[in-house]
Picture (cartoon, rainbow, N blue to C red):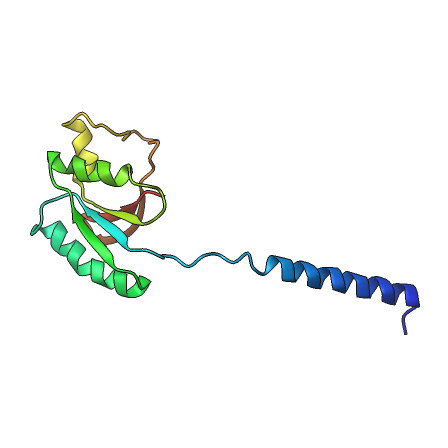
Length: 139
């Protein structure tokens, strides 16, 4: 049997550990998503990229439990849609379907958003659906 002072310190340590566990337990991450997700397509409705978005949109909705809204933003060689996606709130609820024109357009058009090697608005590739198309999100 342990001496009384060792038993008392062990009991006190266990009580503190239990109290800290109870205090920290409510700090659990929120569920994602809690509202509909917007999928920006920077091309006209009916094109190949739009068809791809309308195929993967419902599947993403089934997996996440929230509807996925396909939002077509065509024009200016797709830069209107890209700019809309980049300038959206960085909360993870706006995805942008990016095509190779995202990397080609800065050579042809003056862009209204930062597209340098280290842009202020970072675009992160999240998945590769086809060899030519990427899904990006503004974190």
